[in-house]
Length: 582
Image (cartoon, rainbow, N blue to C red; front, side):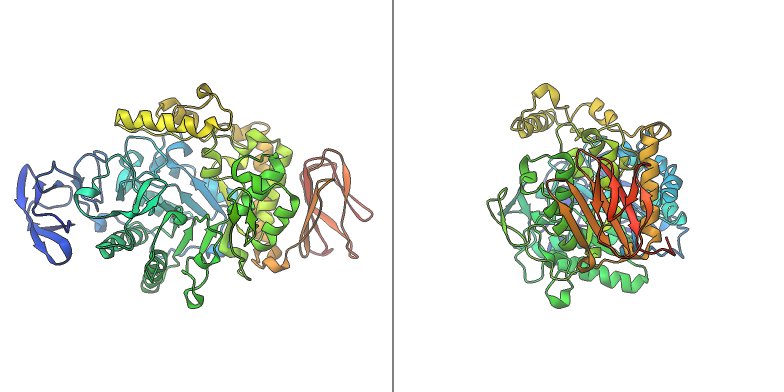
């Protein structure tokens, strides 16, 4: 006998549609409905009929083999034979994170195909593989952030068994797995939750419409839905960490914020399993409470993305000033980001037209992820431009050197390490023609203010947009990609081998710069990172009594000079004060 349950607190009747029959479910406490039947066996398809609706997939469906509109399928999680019993991930503080999109990482775009590149990632020096969302979404291709089947891995990637096998193989190769999850909204297509219960509320709003109901009537079960989802990925799929998308779009006025509840429950699971588990947030709030310990009034999230560092570094490299980049562009911004994480920690933001942020107050840099590219910062450009499309390889090397010597946990986006030629575009595959057309029109409106012509903005619904975004794995074998990849390998090796770079002490980061001459120096004793972003060769001053040694240089012509180091334009050198050790 198998048991199926569903939460539908306002329903008058719920029928289970299974094996071409309809069976009445019984109401129980808390708005739940339940039924035990011998028809409910692993592999059986089923759906729910709520108050006479058409058959609907289970909101907690573990398997959607026929897409978001099809029936759910019963999954036996215990049937998978895991081989990672002795697995323990490296601490997050020691991570080198590689973010990838399963559908464009390989030509095949599946979990199994991704396994063929794991040796490459391990040899590169990566320790943690971060997967963009893999929960069920409409169509065959998409970013995954408009998911509706939060408990069901996307069938097009390989479904539940494919994801488990990928995680298992990652662990066998010494790679931890981070999974992106979206708890701030649901996708528009295949979202049948309104038939079941008040998962959304009009008491608050989000960029995608009504907000998730984390603090209104019936919100206890909505909170349980998301916490159970997080625990499922960590337990049933052996994922090591979750990256929670756009937590600034979560509205929760409860005394215990949903992020704090989630962190407490993950901590409990970590204690029970003895396995290191982590939560990482994406936040636009510049609010350190997200990553502060609960004992001092924080939410207890382990780390968060650091957009200020990205914006500060991106603008000094590209000179871009549109949108939120208008708040950045000075070397002093970059210096502050390296020493304090938040450039805006309480002062006025011209872009926001208000004060923004709060000081990090002595937090470790290991509470923040540092990067110069990620899916958002590339894919949310009109033509999916990577940094390698905007600047030359010299500045790319400067960017990589600063990312891997910063006091933050470094993250790179797939293909970044060789300056990939393929863009990463925004793509969808909505089956509703009206929705597809609306997404296409909205994308064009979004970028019209930047002066882009309609014909220059790829159609998100086109398969070509998706195909163009796939990595070209032949590129690393050819110039200039080969040279960029070799530099990334050096940077990652430096990060993992130098004790000074393993510290998260931002108060020990010292900087010097010249805004006019465009040189920048960061010291993390005994290492010194000297950059020339100017248009002419110059000697960057290094005021040290001890002899210096060049341990890494982006150009062969870089030389030590009395009082400093001579750098050609768009170059970087890593120096050491220590004469005896490198």
